[in-house]
Amino acid sequence: MQEKAIIVREACHKDLFRVVEINRICLPENYPYYFFQHLLERYPGCFLVAEVDGEIVGYIMNRIEKGMSSFNPSPFRLVKKGHVVSIAVMPEHRRKGIGRMLLEWGIRSMREEYGAEEVILEVRVSNEPALSLYKKMGFIVVKTIKGYYHDGEDAYLMSKKLVG
Ligand code: ACO
Ligand code: ZN
Image 1 (tube, rainbow, N blue to C red):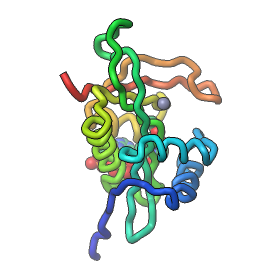
Image 2: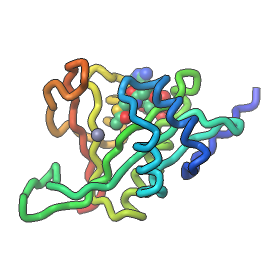
Image 3: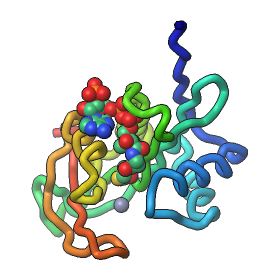
């Protein structure tokens, strides 16, 4: 059987209802529609969707922040950090490399279009698939954030250096 082509592209407004739907199906961390809309308007180059056969099956949503480096923290030197706010791929389309494509493209855009020097994210300590994807992509655990999630689960703060 012919493999179906996977397309990754920047999201647009008409994609947002589907993105919100995928977020609700795949993750317990959900946000109101205007939150997605705000991030799309503010950081369009790193809000991406993946399509298979013309249907959106995954997304990554990022933002850019200024703060202390995870690698060389100093209150006197703030760096631009890309923050992976949310990434998800529909269950029936997992393990096809889509998550990795979204993350690779998203990171490249945060670095090249927005000047991010590192990328950070939080992930549930029990989320093995995501943790293993992030480790494979070169993220390291910087610290554990106790009780980060609404159900009390801890998060790992993970980070990946992009420059220097
Ligand atoms: N078990 C072990 N390793 C895995 C798994 C798994 N279930 N899934 C992915 N990986 C690792 C593997 O190393 C894999 O490479 P391989 O398939 O060659 O072995 C590598 O990650 C790349 O996998 P992809 O196929 O690119 O990942 P996928 O498209 O399946 O998406 C994702 C991964 C996004 C984590 C998906 O499982 C998902 O949507 N999960 C539910 C939502 C979620 O947890 N999102 C992350 C929350 S944290 C945050 O958003 C910042
Ligand atoms: Zn976050």
